Amino acid sequence: MKRGAVLRAAAVLAAFLATGCGSAKSGAGKAATSADGLEFVPKTAIGYVTVDTDFSDGNWDRARKLGKKFPEYEAQRDKLMTQLNKGGDNKMTFKDDVKPWLGKDAGAALVISGGAKSKGHGIIWVASTNDAKAVKALKKGGAKSAETYKGIKTYSAKDGSYSAIDNGYVVLGDDEATLKLALNTKKDGPSIGDDDTASKAAKHVGDDSIVALVVGRAGVQSALKTAGKSGQNAMIAKALKQLNVNDFNGLALGISPKDRGVALDGWVGSGGKTQLPDDATPTLLTDLPATTAVALTGQDLGGGLEQVLTAVGDSDPKVSSQITQAEAALGLEKGSLGKAFGGKFSISVSGSTKPVVALVVENQGSDTKDTLDKLVGVSQLVGAAPTNLTVKGGSGKQVTFGSITIAEGTLNDVSIITNDPAWLNAWGTGATLGDSDSYKRVTDEAGVPDKVGALLYVDPQATATLGESLSKTGLASSLTGKLGSAVSGATRTTMPGAGADGMGDHEMGAMGATPSAADKTVMAKEALTYLGPILFWTQRDGDNLEFHGFSEITDGK
Image (cartoon, rainbow, N blue to C red; front, side, top):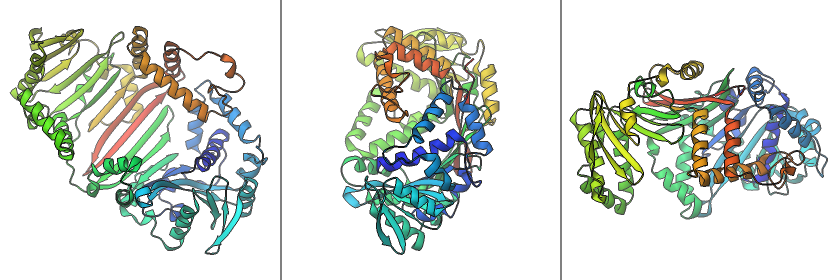
Protein backbone atom coordinates (compact mmCIF):
# COMPACT_ATOMS: atom_id res chain seq x y z
CA MET A 1 0.00 0.00 0.00
CA LYS A 2 1.28 3.48 -0.85
CA ARG A 3 3.07 5.06 2.12
CA GLY A 4 1.78 8.54 1.33
CA ALA A 5 -1.84 7.45 1.44
CA VAL A 6 -1.33 5.73 4.77
CA LEU A 7 0.40 8.76 6.27
CA ARG A 8 -2.37 11.10 5.13
CA ALA A 9 -5.02 8.91 6.76
CA ALA A 10 -2.94 8.52 9.91
CA ALA A 11 -2.48 12.28 10.16
CA VAL A 12 -6.24 12.83 10.03
CA LEU A 13 -6.87 10.29 12.79
CA ALA A 14 -4.03 11.62 14.94
CA ALA A 15 -5.41 15.12 14.63
CA PHE A 16 -8.82 13.98 15.81
CA LEU A 17 -7.24 12.30 18.82
CA ALA A 18 -5.30 15.42 19.69
CA THR A 19 -8.12 17.92 19.31
CA GLY A 20 -11.08 15.89 20.50
CA CYS A 21 -13.27 16.92 17.60
CA GLY A 22 -15.67 14.65 15.80
CA SER A 23 -19.04 14.29 14.18
CA ALA A 24 -22.00 11.97 14.40
CA LYS A 25 -21.80 9.30 17.05
CA SER A 26 -20.41 6.07 15.73
CA GLY A 27 -17.78 4.01 17.53
CA ALA A 28 -15.40 1.51 15.99
CA GLY A 29 -17.65 -1.33 17.11
CA LYS A 30 -20.63 0.13 15.27
CA ALA A 31 -18.50 1.06 12.26
CA ALA A 32 -17.23 -2.53 12.15
CA THR A 33 -20.77 -3.71 11.36
CA SER A 34 -21.85 -0.67 9.33
CA ALA A 35 -23.17 -1.50 5.88
CA ASP A 36 -22.13 1.93 4.59
CA GLY A 37 -18.34 2.08 4.57
CA LEU A 38 -18.02 -1.69 4.26
CA GLU A 39 -19.83 -1.60 0.91
CA PHE A 40 -16.49 -0.59 -0.63
CA VAL A 41 -14.60 -3.57 0.82
CA PRO A 42 -14.59 -6.68 -1.41
CA LYS A 43 -15.35 -10.07 0.05
CA THR A 44 -11.81 -11.14 -0.90
CA ALA A 45 -10.24 -8.59 1.48
CA ILE A 46 -8.25 -10.27 4.24
CA GLY A 47 -9.80 -7.92 6.74
CA TYR A 48 -10.42 -4.33 7.70
CA VAL A 49 -9.85 -1.79 10.46
CA THR A 50 -12.42 0.76 11.60
CA VAL A 51 -11.91 3.80 13.82
CA ASP A 52 -14.30 5.64 16.12
CA THR A 53 -14.44 9.13 14.58
CA ASP A 54 -16.62 10.66 17.26
CA PHE A 55 -13.60 12.00 19.08
CA SER A 56 -15.76 14.11 21.36
CA ASP A 57 -17.47 11.11 22.99
CA GLY A 58 -16.66 9.43 26.28
CA ASN A 59 -14.41 6.82 24.68
CA TRP A 60 -11.91 9.39 23.45
CA ASP A 61 -12.33 11.50 26.58
CA ARG A 62 -11.00 8.55 28.56
CA ALA A 63 -8.19 8.06 26.04
CA ARG A 64 -7.08 11.67 26.40
CA LYS A 65 -7.21 11.47 30.20
CA LEU A 66 -4.96 8.42 30.05
CA GLY A 67 -2.63 10.22 27.64
CA LYS A 68 -2.27 13.15 30.01
CA LYS A 69 -0.67 10.85 32.57
CA PHE A 70 2.42 10.81 30.34
CA PRO A 71 4.52 13.99 30.79
CA GLU A 72 5.19 14.47 27.06
CA TYR A 73 1.58 14.02 25.94
CA GLU A 74 0.48 17.65 25.75
CA ALA A 75 3.78 18.84 24.25
CA GLN A 76 3.62 16.20 21.52
CA ARG A 77 -0.07 16.91 20.92
CA ASP A 78 0.63 20.62 20.44
CA LYS A 79 3.58 19.85 18.18
CA LEU A 80 1.42 17.56 16.05
CA MET A 81 -1.32 20.15 15.64
CA THR A 82 1.23 22.84 14.77
CA GLN A 83 2.66 20.55 12.11
CA LEU A 84 -0.76 19.67 10.66
CA ASN A 85 -1.91 23.29 10.57
CA LYS A 86 1.39 24.70 9.35
CA GLY A 87 0.64 24.00 5.72
CA GLY A 88 3.19 22.67 3.25
CA ASP A 89 3.86 23.71 -0.32
CA ASN A 90 0.14 23.51 -1.08
CA LYS A 91 -0.79 25.48 2.08
CA MET A 92 -3.22 22.72 3.06
CA THR A 93 -4.10 22.53 6.77
CA PHE A 94 -6.15 20.17 8.85
CA LYS A 95 -8.38 22.76 10.52
CA ASP A 96 -9.29 24.62 7.30
CA ASP A 97 -9.27 21.89 4.66
CA VAL A 98 -9.98 18.52 6.32
CA LYS A 99 -11.92 19.03 9.54
CA PRO A 100 -14.88 20.84 7.88
CA TRP A 101 -16.01 17.78 5.91
CA LEU A 102 -15.00 14.77 8.04
CA GLY A 103 -17.93 12.48 8.75
CA LYS A 104 -19.04 9.67 10.99
CA ASP A 105 -16.65 6.78 10.33
CA ALA A 106 -13.38 5.79 8.71
CA GLY A 107 -11.58 2.57 7.93
CA ALA A 108 -9.03 0.70 5.86
CA ALA A 109 -8.94 -2.75 4.26
CA LEU A 110 -6.22 -5.00 2.83
CA VAL A 111 -6.63 -6.99 -0.38
CA ILE A 112 -4.08 -9.41 -1.87
CA SER A 113 -4.45 -9.98 -5.59
CA GLY A 114 -2.41 -10.35 -8.73
CA GLY A 115 -1.18 -13.95 -8.81
CA ALA A 116 2.52 -14.80 -8.65
CA LYS A 117 3.58 -11.16 -8.36
CA SER A 118 0.78 -10.18 -6.04
CA LYS A 119 1.14 -7.46 -3.45
CA GLY A 120 -1.05 -6.14 -0.72
CA HIS A 121 -3.33 -3.31 -1.83
CA GLY A 122 -5.14 -0.93 0.47
CA ILE A 123 -8.57 0.68 0.42
CA ILE A 124 -9.30 3.61 2.75
CA TRP A 125 -12.70 5.19 3.27
CA VAL A 126 -13.66 8.30 5.24
CA ALA A 127 -17.22 9.53 5.64
CA SER A 128 -17.88 13.03 4.32
CA THR A 129 -20.45 15.52 5.56
CA ASN A 130 -19.79 17.89 2.66
CA ASP A 131 -18.67 16.33 -0.63
CA ALA A 132 -17.91 19.70 -2.25
CA LYS A 133 -15.48 20.62 0.53
CA ALA A 134 -13.93 17.16 0.31
CA VAL A 135 -13.30 17.61 -3.43
CA LYS A 136 -11.77 21.01 -2.75
CA ALA A 137 -9.45 19.46 -0.16
CA LEU A 138 -8.37 16.69 -2.55
CA LYS A 139 -7.48 19.21 -5.23
CA LYS A 140 -5.67 21.50 -2.82
CA GLY A 141 -3.68 18.48 -1.70
CA GLY A 142 -2.44 17.99 -5.26
CA ALA A 143 -4.97 15.50 -6.64
CA LYS A 144 -5.68 15.90 -10.35
CA SER A 145 -8.92 15.09 -12.12
CA ALA A 146 -8.78 11.69 -13.79
CA GLU A 147 -11.42 9.73 -15.68
CA THR A 148 -15.08 9.49 -14.79
CA TYR A 149 -15.60 5.83 -13.92
CA LYS A 150 -19.16 4.54 -14.10
CA GLY A 151 -20.46 8.02 -13.47
CA ILE A 152 -18.11 8.75 -10.56
CA LYS A 153 -15.36 11.35 -10.84
CA THR A 154 -11.92 10.04 -9.87
CA TYR A 155 -8.72 11.85 -8.92
CA SER A 156 -5.05 10.85 -9.12
CA ALA A 157 -2.20 11.81 -6.78
CA LYS A 158 1.55 12.05 -7.36
CA ASP A 159 2.19 8.93 -5.28
CA GLY A 160 0.07 6.85 -7.66
CA SER A 161 -2.99 6.57 -5.44
CA TYR A 162 -6.48 7.28 -6.75
CA SER A 163 -9.51 8.66 -4.94
CA ALA A 164 -13.18 9.30 -5.54
CA ILE A 165 -16.23 10.59 -3.72
CA ASP A 166 -19.31 8.38 -3.75
CA ASN A 167 -22.48 9.21 -1.82
CA GLY A 168 -20.91 10.74 1.26
CA TYR A 169 -17.65 8.80 1.31
CA VAL A 170 -14.14 9.70 0.21
CA VAL A 171 -12.65 6.44 -1.05
CA LEU A 172 -8.95 5.95 -1.74
CA GLY A 173 -7.12 3.08 -3.41
CA ASP A 174 -3.35 2.82 -3.51
CA ASP A 175 -3.58 2.50 -7.29
CA GLU A 176 -6.22 2.95 -10.00
CA ALA A 177 -7.19 -0.72 -10.16
CA THR A 178 -7.76 -0.89 -6.41
CA LEU A 179 -10.00 2.19 -6.42
CA LYS A 180 -12.05 0.68 -9.25
CA LEU A 181 -12.31 -2.57 -7.29
CA ALA A 182 -13.78 -0.63 -4.36
CA LEU A 183 -16.25 1.25 -6.56
CA ASN A 184 -17.29 -1.95 -8.35
CA THR A 185 -17.83 -3.66 -5.00
CA LYS A 186 -20.07 -0.82 -3.83
CA LYS A 187 -22.18 -1.12 -6.98
CA ASP A 188 -22.27 -4.86 -7.65
CA GLY A 189 -20.80 -6.65 -4.60
CA PRO A 190 -20.02 -9.02 -3.08
CA SER A 191 -18.64 -7.10 -0.12
CA ILE A 192 -16.99 -8.37 3.02
CA GLY A 193 -20.34 -7.91 4.72
CA ASP A 194 -21.52 -10.87 2.63
CA ASP A 195 -18.95 -13.09 4.38
CA ASP A 196 -20.94 -14.57 7.26
CA THR A 197 -17.77 -15.32 9.24
CA ALA A 198 -16.66 -11.67 9.12
CA SER A 199 -20.13 -10.37 9.95
CA LYS A 200 -20.52 -12.72 12.92
CA ALA A 201 -17.07 -11.85 14.25
CA ALA A 202 -17.73 -8.10 13.94
CA LYS A 203 -20.70 -8.37 16.29
CA HIS A 204 -18.27 -9.27 19.09
CA VAL A 205 -16.58 -5.85 18.93
CA GLY A 206 -17.82 -3.62 21.74
CA ASP A 207 -19.43 -0.25 21.00
CA ASP A 208 -16.89 1.41 23.31
CA SER A 209 -13.98 0.35 21.08
CA ILE A 210 -12.02 3.18 19.48
CA VAL A 211 -10.27 0.86 17.01
CA ALA A 212 -11.54 -2.47 15.68
CA LEU A 213 -10.07 -5.18 13.44
CA VAL A 214 -12.14 -7.81 11.61
CA VAL A 215 -10.86 -10.76 9.53
CA GLY A 216 -13.08 -13.12 7.53
CA ARG A 217 -12.49 -16.63 6.24
CA ALA A 218 -13.21 -15.76 2.60
CA GLY A 219 -10.37 -13.24 2.52
CA VAL A 220 -7.89 -15.65 4.07
CA GLN A 221 -8.87 -18.34 1.56
CA SER A 222 -8.48 -15.83 -1.27
CA ALA A 223 -5.02 -14.85 -0.02
CA LEU A 224 -3.98 -18.50 -0.05
CA LYS A 225 -5.05 -18.85 -3.68
CA THR A 226 -3.47 -15.63 -4.96
CA ALA A 227 -0.28 -15.33 -2.88
CA GLY A 228 2.84 -15.73 -4.99
CA LYS A 229 5.27 -18.61 -5.09
CA SER A 230 8.36 -16.56 -4.29
CA GLY A 231 9.48 -13.80 -1.96
CA GLN A 232 7.42 -12.34 0.87
CA ASN A 233 4.06 -13.58 -0.41
CA ALA A 234 5.35 -17.16 -0.48
CA MET A 235 6.23 -16.81 3.20
CA ILE A 236 2.73 -15.51 3.93
CA ALA A 237 1.16 -18.36 1.97
CA LYS A 238 3.29 -20.97 3.75
CA ALA A 239 2.34 -19.56 7.14
CA LEU A 240 -1.35 -19.50 6.26
CA LYS A 241 -1.27 -23.07 4.97
CA GLN A 242 -0.12 -24.25 8.40
CA LEU A 243 -3.51 -23.11 9.68
CA ASN A 244 -6.68 -25.13 9.37
CA VAL A 245 -8.52 -22.46 7.38
CA ASN A 246 -11.65 -24.57 7.09
CA ASP A 247 -11.92 -24.47 10.88
CA PHE A 248 -11.48 -20.68 10.97
CA ASN A 249 -14.75 -18.78 11.26
CA GLY A 250 -13.57 -15.20 11.57
CA LEU A 251 -11.66 -12.99 13.98
CA ALA A 252 -12.41 -9.63 15.55
CA LEU A 253 -10.82 -7.46 18.19
CA GLY A 254 -11.41 -4.02 19.62
CA ILE A 255 -9.34 -1.64 21.72
CA SER A 256 -11.13 0.52 24.27
CA PRO A 257 -9.88 3.01 26.88
CA LYS A 258 -11.05 2.49 30.44
CA ASP A 259 -10.80 4.74 33.47
CA ARG A 260 -7.48 3.24 34.61
CA GLY A 261 -6.06 1.61 31.51
CA VAL A 262 -6.57 0.25 28.02
CA ALA A 263 -8.53 -2.93 27.27
CA LEU A 264 -8.43 -5.32 24.34
CA ASP A 265 -11.35 -7.67 23.64
CA GLY A 266 -11.45 -10.19 20.82
CA TRP A 267 -13.09 -13.33 19.46
CA VAL A 268 -12.03 -16.16 17.14
CA GLY A 269 -14.65 -18.35 15.49
CA SER A 270 -14.12 -22.08 15.06
CA GLY A 271 -15.84 -24.71 12.98
CA GLY A 272 -15.73 -27.10 15.92
CA LYS A 273 -12.77 -29.19 14.76
CA THR A 274 -10.30 -27.60 17.17
CA GLN A 275 -10.57 -29.02 20.67
CA LEU A 276 -10.25 -26.38 23.39
CA PRO A 277 -9.63 -27.28 27.05
CA ASP A 278 -12.21 -26.23 29.61
CA ASP A 279 -11.55 -23.02 31.53
CA ALA A 280 -9.98 -23.49 34.97
CA THR A 281 -8.82 -21.46 37.96
CA PRO A 282 -5.23 -20.19 37.36
CA THR A 283 -3.85 -21.56 40.65
CA LEU A 284 -0.37 -22.35 39.29
CA LEU A 285 0.01 -18.65 38.46
CA THR A 286 -1.48 -17.18 41.62
CA ASP A 287 0.70 -19.52 43.73
CA LEU A 288 3.90 -18.10 42.19
CA PRO A 289 6.10 -15.77 44.30
CA ALA A 290 4.88 -12.17 44.58
CA THR A 291 8.16 -11.02 42.98
CA THR A 292 7.26 -12.68 39.66
CA ALA A 293 7.97 -10.43 36.67
CA VAL A 294 6.37 -12.46 33.86
CA ALA A 295 4.14 -15.51 34.06
CA LEU A 296 1.97 -17.59 31.74
CA THR A 297 -0.48 -20.24 32.84
CA GLY A 298 -2.68 -22.60 30.89
CA GLN A 299 -3.58 -26.24 30.44
CA ASP A 300 -2.31 -29.25 28.51
CA LEU A 301 1.17 -27.99 27.69
CA GLY A 302 2.13 -31.50 26.63
CA GLY A 303 -0.76 -31.80 24.19
CA GLY A 304 0.17 -28.46 22.66
CA LEU A 305 3.82 -29.47 22.26
CA GLU A 306 2.74 -32.76 20.72
CA GLN A 307 0.55 -30.95 18.17
CA VAL A 308 3.35 -28.53 17.28
CA LEU A 309 5.93 -31.30 16.83
CA THR A 310 3.49 -33.31 14.71
CA ALA A 311 2.65 -30.33 12.49
CA VAL A 312 6.31 -29.38 12.06
CA GLY A 313 7.27 -32.96 11.29
CA ASP A 314 4.45 -33.36 8.77
CA SER A 315 5.57 -30.22 6.92
CA ASP A 316 9.20 -31.36 6.39
CA PRO A 317 10.49 -34.97 6.12
CA LYS A 318 13.97 -33.92 7.32
CA VAL A 319 12.54 -32.34 10.45
CA SER A 320 10.39 -35.42 11.01
CA SER A 321 13.53 -37.57 10.89
CA GLN A 322 15.29 -35.29 13.39
CA ILE A 323 12.32 -35.52 15.77
CA THR A 324 12.43 -39.32 15.54
CA GLN A 325 16.16 -39.31 16.33
CA ALA A 326 15.58 -37.03 19.33
CA GLU A 327 12.84 -39.34 20.63
CA ALA A 328 15.24 -42.28 20.45
CA ALA A 329 18.01 -40.34 22.23
CA LEU A 330 15.68 -39.20 25.02
CA GLY A 331 13.98 -42.55 25.37
CA LEU A 332 10.50 -41.07 25.07
CA GLU A 333 7.92 -40.42 22.38
CA LYS A 334 6.23 -37.08 21.75
CA GLY A 335 2.94 -38.75 22.63
CA SER A 336 4.16 -39.17 26.21
CA LEU A 337 4.33 -35.38 26.59
CA GLY A 338 0.54 -35.21 26.56
CA LYS A 339 0.34 -37.74 29.39
CA ALA A 340 3.08 -36.13 31.46
CA PHE A 341 2.09 -32.48 31.03
CA GLY A 342 -1.63 -32.76 30.38
CA GLY A 343 -2.84 -30.73 33.36
CA LYS A 344 -2.34 -27.13 34.43
CA PHE A 345 1.05 -25.46 33.99
CA SER A 346 2.79 -22.14 34.54
CA ILE A 347 5.99 -20.67 33.11
CA SER A 348 7.48 -17.74 35.01
CA VAL A 349 10.45 -15.39 35.16
CA SER A 350 11.46 -13.68 38.39
CA GLY A 351 14.58 -12.33 40.08
CA SER A 352 16.16 -8.91 40.53
CA THR A 353 19.80 -9.56 39.59
CA LYS A 354 19.52 -12.62 37.36
CA PRO A 355 16.51 -14.27 35.71
CA VAL A 356 15.03 -17.27 37.47
CA VAL A 357 12.95 -19.30 35.03
CA ALA A 358 10.56 -21.95 36.30
CA LEU A 359 8.12 -24.40 34.72
CA VAL A 360 5.50 -25.74 37.12
CA VAL A 361 3.16 -28.55 36.02
CA GLU A 362 0.43 -30.53 37.73
CA ASN A 363 1.54 -34.04 38.53
CA GLN A 364 -0.05 -36.66 36.31
CA GLY A 365 1.10 -39.64 38.36
CA SER A 366 4.34 -41.42 37.51
CA ASP A 367 4.19 -40.20 33.89
CA THR A 368 5.25 -36.69 34.91
CA LYS A 369 8.22 -37.74 37.07
CA ASP A 370 9.43 -40.35 34.57
CA THR A 371 9.34 -37.83 31.72
CA LEU A 372 11.17 -35.18 33.76
CA ASP A 373 13.85 -37.70 34.72
CA LYS A 374 14.37 -38.57 31.06
CA LEU A 375 14.58 -34.93 30.03
CA VAL A 376 17.19 -34.17 32.71
CA GLY A 377 18.96 -37.46 31.99
CA VAL A 378 19.77 -36.40 28.43
CA SER A 379 22.58 -34.32 29.99
CA GLN A 380 24.59 -37.55 30.25
CA LEU A 381 25.01 -37.45 26.47
CA VAL A 382 27.32 -34.45 26.95
CA GLY A 383 29.05 -35.78 30.05
CA ALA A 384 27.01 -33.99 32.72
CA ALA A 385 25.48 -36.59 35.01
CA PRO A 386 22.47 -35.59 37.16
CA THR A 387 22.86 -35.69 40.93
CA ASN A 388 20.18 -36.13 43.58
CA LEU A 389 18.82 -32.97 45.17
CA THR A 390 17.25 -32.62 48.59
CA VAL A 391 13.81 -31.10 48.19
CA LYS A 392 11.52 -30.34 51.10
CA GLY A 393 8.42 -32.48 50.81
CA GLY A 394 9.59 -34.36 47.72
CA SER A 395 12.52 -35.50 45.59
CA GLY A 396 14.65 -33.88 42.93
CA LYS A 397 17.71 -33.88 40.71
CA GLN A 398 20.04 -31.26 39.31
CA VAL A 399 22.62 -31.05 36.55
CA THR A 400 25.21 -28.37 35.83
CA PHE A 401 26.49 -27.24 32.43
CA GLY A 402 29.31 -24.78 33.07
CA SER A 403 27.70 -21.84 34.88
CA ILE A 404 24.14 -23.04 34.24
CA THR A 405 22.29 -25.32 36.64
CA ILE A 406 19.02 -27.07 35.84
CA ALA A 407 17.02 -28.54 38.72
CA GLU A 408 13.82 -30.58 38.75
CA GLY A 409 11.73 -31.70 41.65
CA THR A 410 8.43 -33.37 42.47
CA LEU A 411 6.54 -31.85 45.39
CA ASN A 412 3.20 -33.48 46.21
CA ASP A 413 0.83 -32.18 43.51
CA VAL A 414 3.32 -30.34 41.26
CA SER A 415 6.58 -30.91 39.44
CA ILE A 416 9.03 -28.09 38.76
CA ILE A 417 11.95 -27.42 36.41
CA THR A 418 14.02 -24.32 37.13
CA ASN A 419 17.51 -22.84 36.82
CA ASP A 420 17.58 -22.05 40.57
CA PRO A 421 17.55 -25.08 42.93
CA ALA A 422 16.59 -22.82 45.85
CA TRP A 423 13.35 -21.98 44.02
CA LEU A 424 12.18 -25.58 44.55
CA ASN A 425 12.29 -25.30 48.33
CA ALA A 426 10.74 -21.82 48.22
CA TRP A 427 7.62 -23.13 46.46
CA GLY A 428 4.56 -22.81 48.66
CA THR A 429 6.23 -20.45 51.14
CA GLY A 430 6.20 -16.68 51.44
CA ALA A 431 3.99 -14.09 49.74
CA THR A 432 2.28 -15.21 46.54
CA LEU A 433 1.40 -13.33 43.38
CA GLY A 434 -2.30 -13.97 43.89
CA ASP A 435 -2.19 -12.25 47.29
CA SER A 436 -0.27 -9.18 46.10
CA ASP A 437 -2.09 -5.86 46.03
CA SER A 438 -1.04 -5.10 42.45
CA TYR A 439 -2.34 -8.43 41.09
CA LYS A 440 -5.65 -8.16 42.93
CA ARG A 441 -6.08 -4.55 41.82
CA VAL A 442 -5.40 -5.09 38.13
CA THR A 443 -7.44 -8.31 37.83
CA ASP A 444 -10.36 -6.48 39.43
CA GLU A 445 -9.97 -3.49 37.09
CA ALA A 446 -9.71 -5.77 34.07
CA GLY A 447 -12.62 -7.99 35.09
CA VAL A 448 -10.67 -11.25 34.89
CA PRO A 449 -13.06 -14.15 35.59
CA ASP A 450 -12.39 -16.87 38.14
CA LYS A 451 -11.78 -19.43 35.39
CA VAL A 452 -9.73 -18.88 32.24
CA GLY A 453 -8.23 -20.91 29.44
CA ALA A 454 -4.85 -19.18 29.64
CA LEU A 455 -3.55 -16.12 31.50
CA LEU A 456 -0.44 -14.01 30.88
CA TYR A 457 0.79 -11.60 33.57
CA VAL A 458 3.54 -9.00 33.08
CA ASP A 459 4.87 -6.62 35.73
CA PRO A 460 6.67 -3.90 33.70
CA GLN A 461 8.49 -2.53 36.76
CA ALA A 462 9.91 -5.89 37.81
CA THR A 463 10.77 -6.70 34.20
CA ALA A 464 12.56 -3.37 33.78
CA THR A 465 14.53 -3.88 37.01
CA LEU A 466 15.66 -7.29 35.82
CA GLY A 467 16.54 -5.88 32.39
CA GLU A 468 18.57 -3.08 33.97
CA SER A 469 20.53 -5.58 36.05
CA LEU A 470 21.25 -7.66 32.97
CA SER A 471 22.42 -4.60 31.03
CA LYS A 472 24.90 -3.72 33.79
CA THR A 473 26.39 -7.21 33.58
CA GLY A 474 26.61 -6.95 29.81
CA LEU A 475 24.38 -9.98 29.22
CA ALA A 476 21.68 -7.93 27.53
CA SER A 477 23.68 -5.00 26.14
CA SER A 478 23.47 -6.25 22.57
CA LEU A 479 19.70 -6.78 22.77
CA THR A 480 19.20 -3.43 24.48
CA GLY A 481 21.27 -1.68 21.83
CA LYS A 482 19.20 -3.21 19.03
CA LEU A 483 15.97 -2.31 20.82
CA GLY A 484 17.19 1.24 21.32
CA SER A 485 18.12 1.53 17.65
CA ALA A 486 14.68 0.28 16.64
CA VAL A 487 12.99 2.80 18.93
CA SER A 488 15.23 5.57 17.59
CA GLY A 489 14.41 4.60 14.00
CA ALA A 490 10.69 4.52 14.72
CA THR A 491 10.96 7.95 16.35
CA ARG A 492 12.67 9.40 13.29
CA THR A 493 9.84 8.09 11.15
CA THR A 494 6.85 9.00 13.27
CA MET A 495 7.60 11.93 15.57
CA PRO A 496 6.31 15.24 14.18
CA GLY A 497 9.17 17.67 13.70
CA ALA A 498 11.74 14.90 14.13
CA GLY A 499 15.25 15.62 12.96
CA ALA A 500 17.88 13.31 11.54
CA ASP A 501 18.74 12.06 15.01
CA GLY A 502 15.18 10.94 15.64
CA MET A 503 14.55 13.67 18.22
CA GLY A 504 12.36 16.74 17.94
CA ASP A 505 13.87 19.51 15.79
CA HIS A 506 14.22 22.07 18.53
CA GLU A 507 14.47 20.71 22.04
CA MET A 508 15.94 17.23 21.44
CA GLY A 509 18.07 17.56 18.32
CA ALA A 510 20.76 19.43 20.21
CA MET A 511 21.37 16.64 22.69
CA GLY A 512 24.17 15.34 20.49
CA ALA A 513 25.63 11.97 21.43
CA THR A 514 23.67 8.77 20.93
CA PRO A 515 22.65 7.27 24.31
CA SER A 516 24.54 4.18 25.43
CA ALA A 517 22.83 0.82 25.85
CA ALA A 518 22.74 1.37 29.62
CA ASP A 519 21.23 4.84 29.15
CA LYS A 520 18.59 3.43 26.81
CA THR A 521 17.70 0.83 29.42
CA VAL A 522 17.26 3.56 32.05
CA MET A 523 15.14 5.61 29.60
CA ALA A 524 12.97 2.58 28.90
CA LYS A 525 12.57 1.93 32.63
CA GLU A 526 11.48 5.54 33.19
CA ALA A 527 8.88 5.23 30.43
CA LEU A 528 7.60 2.00 31.97
CA THR A 529 6.94 3.72 35.30
CA TYR A 530 3.62 4.83 33.79
CA LEU A 531 2.56 1.25 33.11
CA GLY A 532 1.02 -0.95 35.77
CA PRO A 533 0.61 -4.73 35.40
CA ILE A 534 -0.41 -6.08 31.99
CA LEU A 535 -2.83 -9.00 31.59
CA PHE A 536 -3.93 -11.17 28.68
CA TRP A 537 -6.36 -14.08 29.04
CA THR A 538 -8.63 -16.39 27.05
CA GLN A 539 -12.02 -18.00 27.64
CA ARG A 540 -14.08 -20.57 25.81
CA ASP A 541 -17.24 -19.51 24.02
CA GLY A 542 -18.57 -22.92 23.06
CA ASP A 543 -16.30 -24.09 20.25
CA ASN A 544 -15.04 -20.51 19.83
CA LEU A 545 -12.45 -18.53 21.75
CA GLU A 546 -12.65 -15.15 23.46
CA PHE A 547 -9.43 -13.29 24.25
CA HIS A 548 -8.96 -10.21 26.38
CA GLY A 549 -6.17 -7.92 27.51
CA PHE A 550 -5.68 -5.02 29.88
CA SER A 551 -2.80 -2.63 30.46
CA GLU A 552 -3.00 -0.44 33.54
CA ILE A 553 -1.77 3.15 33.12
CA THR A 554 -0.63 4.99 36.23
CA ASP A 555 0.53 8.50 37.09
CA GLY A 556 4.11 7.25 37.37
CA LYS A 557 4.31 7.49 41.15
